[in-house]
Length: 61
Image 1 (cartoon, rainbow, N blue to C red):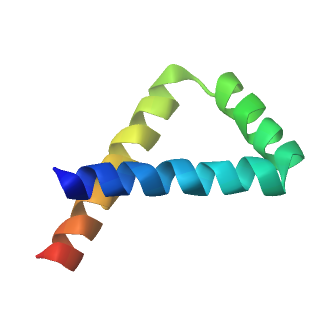
Image 2 (tube, rainbow, N blue to C red; image 1 turned 90 degrees about the horizontal axis):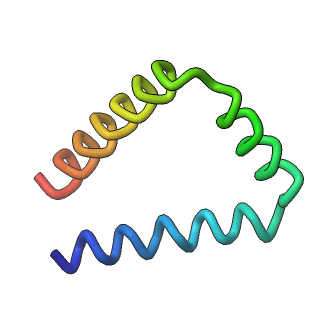
């Protein structure tokens, strides 16, 4: 459970750095995401989740 909390903290840190360092690119990425069809977003989300689980499985194996 603590690994999950640490990973969540890293996500917040990385996103915070992105928004602080290049806010104009972050806004453009959010605008682009809002215009992406839900089906495409769902596939991207599933793909990202699978890659993330495989990566953690490989590293922590």
